[in-house]
Amino acid sequence: MPLPFTLPTTSSVLLSDYFSSATHPALPLHAATRRSVVKDALKKHKRLSAQSRSTHLPTVQDALTSYIPYLLTLNTATSYRDVGAERVDVEVEKPLEVEWRTTLSASIPGREAARPKVTGLHHEVAFVLSTLGYVQSLLRTSTIATAMKHLLQAHSIFTYILSLPTLSAAKNAPLDVQPATISALASLALAEATLIVVSKDDPYTAAVAEDRDETNRDWMFKAPTIPKVRAHLFARICLAAAEHATQACGLLTGNSAGKIDDDLTKYANDLRRTARGKAARFLAIDTELSGKTGEGLAWLRGAKKELGLSVELEEGKRRGFKGLKQSWQERREDRKVEKGGEWGLDAGRFEEARVVEMLEVKWDKENSTVNVQVVPPFEPLLANMPSGREYHSRQVYQPPTLDADTLAQLRAPPEPTEYAFRGDEEDSGGEDSYRKNEPVGAFPGTGSEYSRSATASSYY
Image 1 (cartoon, rainbow, N blue to C red):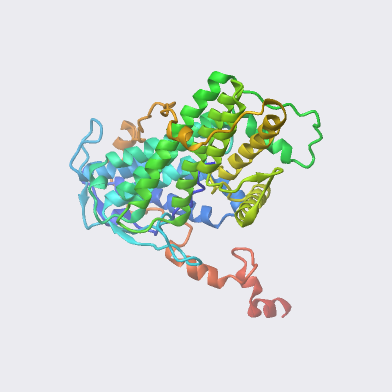
Image 2 (cartoon, one colour):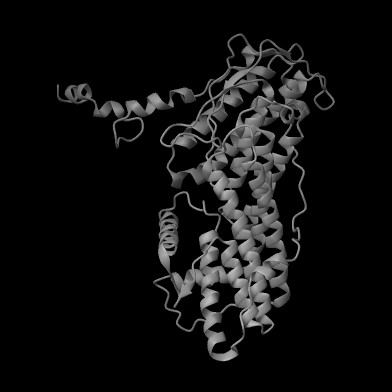
């Protein structure tokens, strides 16, 4: 499952105080209005419960896609370039200063993430496009095809950010929009999209879920089968996903600009382990279908090694303290799924471990009673894994642009009584004070009803 990103929030800013246009006077005003809508959408999204955030994501997406054309038009015009076939002149009255709350940078547990003040329009572009990339990664819960589409779009957005000269050359950017971080996010999105290709046609995961379902009464269970050719193909696709995840791990851990959030680095490493574990498991299936049960068991043990499982199975149960810890982590992940909260931070590693263990118990029993084949060492097998095979063709992100009619309408100067919409939500700097004013357990916005003065006035 893709990483459950936390969307950032931003401060309120009036773009018309920083930019002016002689050719299109209304452009900064309209851009400021749409930015305020983005600020409100992000603030509302943050206050929602985990169960409600998924249904609010399209609202955030619409707000971002409505603001991006105006933002990119400002960015292009300030660089003295034409917007399409039309000349747009924008003057910078003073450098843009805006605050964005970082969500990928490491922070002290229990405290709000930092909200650095960034200077320049290029940082605003980076944060807005990155937020859209996070939203595209989160919009994957409806169907597999839609999930794959959104992840590929997220990859293309992050790749587009890297192609912007002002962003790739920026040295003072916050860690969230550093080129290394953006490149790692692009690799993660592509790895997740590649792994979905295999997951959607993998019957073993569903078999394990049914086996763990206490209400399941299908006693006549038939082991799922995969055609031999597809098993080997799936293994190579998983290895391609592992290569992208490995690249992301290197970029995140080798970033000298600061410390990335531990959840992100752990997720990237777990995704790499899951992809390589799946590859070894599919190679085991391919080998077992050829009648080589002993070698298939060796591949399964190699899969456990790739997944970070060092305990051996005894009668289908894990042994030792590490086994108990792993079982506890799996149960905690199951509870998250049942509650509908944010789950999937293990990148599917525990789920894959259950599949491997199910096959190992089954094949070991068969090998002990029927085939009786020697199980070779797994290290030489892992050292000679085949090369990865790419499945997706890279997409090129086409950012939304202002059409000619809308751009022409911005030539008219704004009316004297026309003001930019500043938003209904308070500035993100007031989040801490917002929480302090709310009594513990109170519904947001009803703090005054719990005060002593409000109670007294209700009686008199």
